[in-house]
Structure formats: structure tokens, C-alpha cells
Image (cartoon, rainbow, N blue to C red; front, top):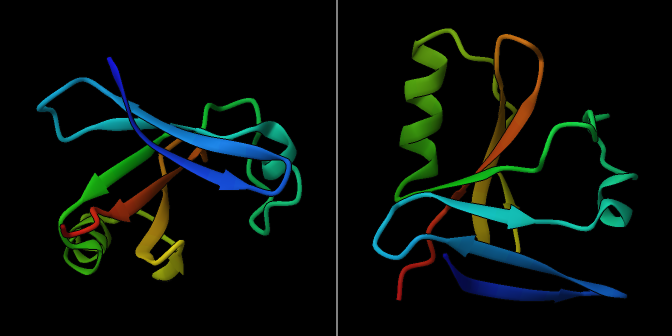
Length: 99
């Protein structure tokens, strides 16, 4: 596992960790940043973020399969959205930044 990215935020940092050469990662977000979340997320569930090449395409695929999603928005210069599983736990999806 390796640190892929660190984003400084007021009073803390957000860390993205992953296994090398895998298109899946975890984003570690301090609870202090999540307490004021606009969607009333359950903070007992870990904050898991999936990275995709195209957020619009992935959101459409999920919607076509009956998954509840939020609208696409921008976060730190990336397009993204959230989706809910069948137990009403929410997960984030962000576009990979193109280098």
C-alpha cells in the first residue's frame, strides 16, 4: 500500500492510499471534516472513494442499474458524485485527474 496523494485542508489533511497498479483507492478523511456534510452521511461507515476515468459515464451506468446517486458536482477540481448501497450507506466516486 502506498500514499498516492495528500490534500491539505484547514487544520488537517486528506490522504489517498492504494495498492500500486490497481484502479481502487481509499481516501482517509478526518471525521472533523465529515461532521458538517450536507447529505447527513452515516459517519459509522468508512469514507470510501472510488476513482473512475469518466464520472458522467459511471453515474449513468449506476442509474441505469437502479442505484441511487447524487448529482455530479466538483470537488478540488474533479467531477464526482456519491451513490448509496442497498443499506443506505453512501460512497464517493471521483474522476481521476488526467496528467
